[in-house]
Image (cartoon, rainbow, N blue to C red):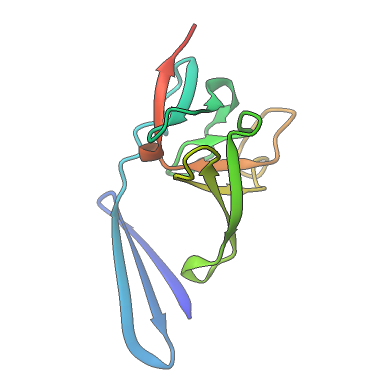
Amino acid sequence: MFLKRILKNDIKILKITSKNTANQIIVSIKMTEIYKSHWEKGVYKCSKCGKILFKSDSKFDSGTKWPSFRKALKEAIKTKPDYSLGMVRTEILCSNCKLHLGHLFNDGKVCGDPHTDAGDRYCVLSESLKFEKRI
């Protein structure tokens, strides 16, 4: 199987085709990443249970379409292998309610994190977050 990714009009279309069959699966996901360019000081909580997951000072612009964080709060995130879509990734989940948050990558430095602790990149779906402003 191979994966072909097409971005058009803020809609992500994933098309998986097999060389051995004519079967095709098409999934469309509306891309509404409201926290991608959000830079207020505060905390990001799980949108389902309210657990605090990230502080705003760990957020950075990764050049991707999703909000990115260099680290999560201690014991806020659980991880598990994700083999979907023909890829090997690390899924991140809220440790309290197990809501899917996104994925963890080790390409923070490559994606533009200027911090000395750069390394991991928590690539998070905005819909899984709720922001709380703090001073």
